[in-house]
Length: 183
Image 1: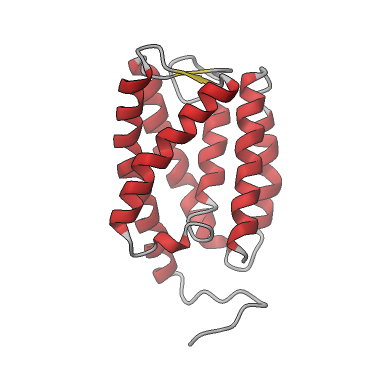
Image 2 (image 1 turned 60 degrees about the vertical axis):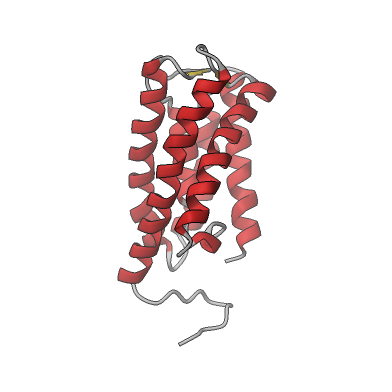
């Protein structure tokens, strides 16, 4: 699997979700997720990604619902509930789970780097979605939201990367047709 192809496909889902939410079309996110998920889960090693997806979505429910309930973050198109993680952001979490063993493979075994990338990259994605598309707002100010997001993502990223590594270890050696096999 080409990590760049995986990353670009994820970004397409992210942009569809953010643009859709900001324009009242929350359903674009799950719609954009479908072909990406079908492609990734239909691969010979897709079973490992299928194990990560519900865990990532559950983590997204906890993190984003906590942010919404606390008033730190407000989401455009808050379907199904205003003070919970909206379906469009859960679609992003599902798509994100499909990158953990592919475009984010470079983080496997690098917990500190995963913490830093989560603490910085997570908040940047939310701030970008807020400032550029108004899909996210920060009712109590950007600083407290960024601190909370940074803390949440500093935990979420290494946790998910660690789970990806563990799932790979238990699912056996990873060989994708067309890539060299290392024994």
